[in-house]
Image (tube, rainbow, N blue to C red):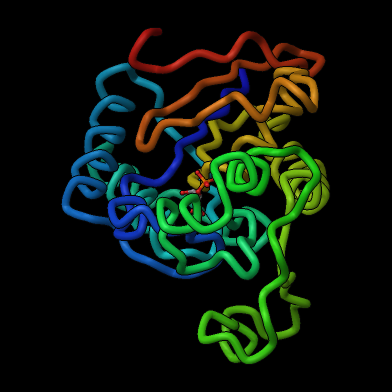
Length: 228
Ligand SMILES: O=C(O)[C@@H](CO)OP(=O)(O)O
């Protein structure tokens, strides 16, 4: 039975510092490393062994994938990295402290920027120190200057359809290591969650989520592997 494993990267340095992160490339904290390893041990314990891997081009997701696969003795499986699995781009909020931003703009405005379905944060200024246009990993890509969840879905889902779903349909056990909002985009699609309800769904770090697909590639109920 095709099985999909979704895992959000372990705690990152800016999760710890409570800063808007988006496409900025921060690494895992020591706790994040432990969360990623624990995810891999859980895969091995439950016998859910990935045969193909997909991840974003961001260090925190790549390292989470590798740490988890190492624990499961599966570092050898084929893996694909693609920017379309990146975190949602946080625009001009990138790098700011979330609490200070609340104090400046109010709780309600920050909640809209963080969790509304289709209101993007303010755009990143050209020349910002967080501008990634010179980063070689994005050569040839038009880097967004901000993204709402809706815009994130518009690049995650076509990639899911074209590159991941066919692999899964061939009977593989696929692991996707990605981010809070790129995974929210996938879960919204796979679990049929409405635009209003998806904004209330939080995806915990380092906690594998499972979908099993039937012969018609219809996903079953999602569940946390720790509960399965
Ligand atoms: O900062 C970010 O990029 C994301 C994920 O950590 O934060 P938020 O919870 O606001 O979506």
